[in-house]
Image (cartoon, rainbow, N blue to C red; front, side):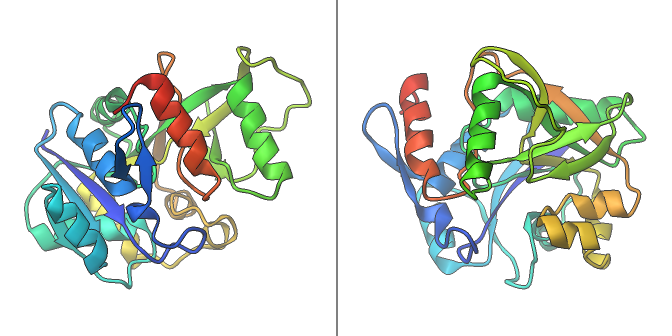
Length: 266
């Protein structure tokens, strides 16, 4: 099945304007922009037919072209990354059986997360959309809780049924657990990894639907699918000891740089 990876990137982020061009220093001391690191993460995935940066901003496009990226310009009217991916698919006028949205704020996304996600969609014909979830250990869960206490959105959590179809996603930490966990303890909380794989029919239908109340309240684009009754498969992935974090706030820069250094990423 042919696979396209689109990396949606916009300059006018509400929480962190200009985020795609923020530089992150790696283990070698070299600083690379967030969009460059996201591009590198996408290009590391095997079995992909095409990778593109999807943006509405000339500054991001110029920076991406400079490091050799394939860029598709999209409208500034796109409300979120899923809408931008849908417009990208329309603009390139090529047929792909699976379109992956690798959001440009997750440069630590391991290649196998995306590969497992694509395989999950291939193995489940009824699923229209798939997204990875990562069971947290105590260290990650405590970080999420600390961010919420400080009024920051540190990540999104997911709950799903026995069939692994999503029940809900939230910027709050769900499900509630009153227990305390050590850094290495397994917890019942799943961190939602901000990557999506869509079948083209579901992706192209998405922009035609109005924003629902849950999507508006949480600010989570994937809730539009759930509010429309579209099955979304949660694919559990294994970090294999790798740390994972999205760049949501300026405070996340040193955290991600520390992870890059610890993992030896240049």
